[in-house]
Amino acid sequence: SQQGEEDPQALSIQEGENATMNCSYKTSINNLQWYRQNSGRGLVHLILIRSNEREKHSGRLRVTLDTSKKSSSLLITASRAADTASYFCATVTLQGAQKLVFGQGTRLTINP
Amino acid sequence: ETGVTQTPRHLVMGMTNKKSLKCEQHLGHNAMYWYKQSAKKPLELMFVYNFKEQTENNSVPSRFSPECPNSSHLFLHLHTLQPEDSALYLCASSQDSWGTSYEQYFGPGTRLTVT
Image 1 (spheres, rainbow over the protein chains, first blue to last red):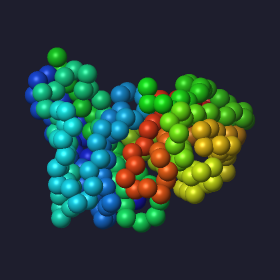
Image 2 (cartoon, one colour):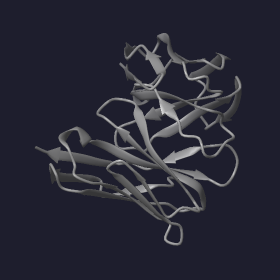
Image 3 (cartoon, rainbow over the protein chains, first blue to last red):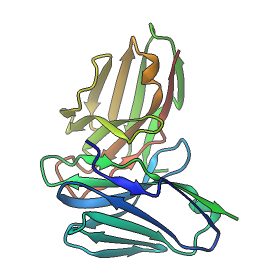
């Protein structure tokens, strides 16, 4: 069954604005990862946050994790046209091998 | 470049053809993965190989046959596919498949069209 669900499914903002995407999941996790995918290309790992962490930063990216609500958010500050892509959250559950379970993604469009 | 290459990038095949997808990673990783990405569906894990051994087969139809001759190479052999198998097939690698904190590195994918 699908673990991560992103919200919104699509987001369109002006360049320079901040973009926030949310992810909800169902079962307990070891960590949660965010990936980016440019149209028709492979996924690129952005950031990993462990279940005992609440917030993590990487450049213009800020990720939060609320395990009590089983949710995470990805904030991209000062967006650029090059940030246009699909963004996916993926969870690693506590059981077994490292299986990444992906959501359907948020399609982000940055308008110049 | 992520260090994971896939060939071919595009493939059109008939339902009676046999073809193979190739993936190679130059990262020294020990785990490799095949995923299927269809329109309007989440990315689906198909197979996992860890140290050349298959550790996961996610109920994939037998018309998809993976092969992992060594930790750097992964193949997906295709035969008698159906039109609904048309999708983007992504290969990924990671340090190993038992370490839960390892991110995965993806190749650019093979866009497969079955006619």
